[in-house]
Length: 540
Ligand SMILES: Nc1nc2c(ncn2[C@@H]2O[C@H](COP(=O)(O)OP(=O)(O)OP(=O)(O)O)[C@@H](O)[C@H]2O)c(=O)[nH]1
Image (cartoon, rainbow, N blue to C red):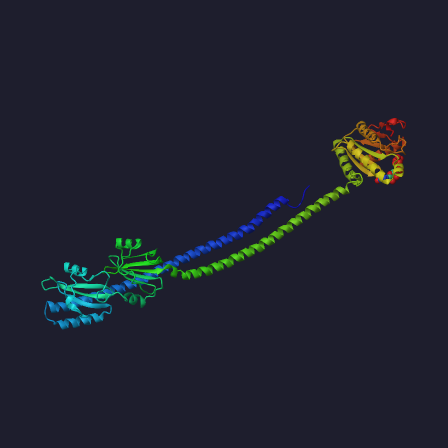
């Protein structure tokens, strides 16, 4: 059986593959969208962190130069003050009142300066701009005094952050020494730099800082000089030592500047930090820009980007669903079409079979016989082999019908057909219903004697079925007569002649008494069976 449609197995495998592709491709697309999105956002995040680093650097370098400039200013002020004190103390060309007035004038020029004073070589206070309790104060025990006394070449010395005894505020003491005319230590000039408000002045003006951004000024001993965070100065850790792995690394390496990203050891906020030394001073500055704040914009961008990606993914899923659904419908339609085609071909085959089959007996019909006999004739002709055609006709069948009814007649014909089929060789012999109660047999390759034997066996087979026929003269059973003819096809001879010969021989069998085989062999010899009508073998 050959079908023009594809095999259902192959088609279902192809369909499954195609459906799987309709799922895999959208998944791949979604994966690509997500991967692209993550990549873009990672790049965006890195960019914002880089911006915060640059921001920290901008603020830090501006602040560092501003702080450096302020201390330079203080240094020059102290230098000028020490000159005035020396004028009075060493050169004796100035009166104390004049010196004090000069010191007052110098202090007023620098707003962050307070308590500009001078001492003698023993640390006793000589001049004080504020002037109270001058005679009682001695600073000989202070670190800055001892440093300056020991070192004639020391420039301006800056103390660690301390709470001023008089101001009660956090200050740095900046001090300078002055020498006697013989070069020996003559005393110091010093002033307090008020730390309270310094950061506000530094940060509040030109520099824009967000809440979590931080400014930290430390001295060389890691003491906090200034910490500015959340928009104000943080006095809680003033004077405390602050260190972290990154700061320690900078302190150790003596680097002038550097960057790092870290979580603060003080408030745990993650920041981009910029570190820079204040040129020529024992101070270093750290500016930290909060990463969380720096990423707010990025987070907003992320949200927008993800919602767009979500929309895109939804479109992909929806389109994929539509395509998948239509593909599924298409496949169902194809499957239905294939099933219809298969059914159609099956019914065509059945029709073809029916058109060549006798509906009563199930044997081949006359049309099929015409087809097969023509084929066998040609083959016998080609091979020069004998071909036997035999006509079989049920005896007294009209009487049988009359006696037993038409239905019983049909059953009788079925039995005859079955007996004939069963008694013939499959594959080579062929039997068909020729019409009415007549059957026709082809025996290819059989010579007359062989054909006779086969046919007479069939005749006996049906008689031995002992199907009652009270109208038969042959002891009341169904019998049939057979006329046959054998021919090796020769030029000038036809199949029709062979069939006609067989028909004539059937006539002879009937005429000679029925229930017999009558045939003429290739050599013209008559082959006939005779049955004694009184033979009890065929009785019921
Ligand atoms: N039940 C039945 N009867 C059929 C069928 N085809 C033909 N017949 C009958 O077969 C009978 C044949 O009758 P006849 O040709 O006179 O032959 P016969 O009665 O068998 O006489 P002989 O052949 O001389 O023995 C007719 O009565 C037909 O109606 C069929 O398919 N079924």
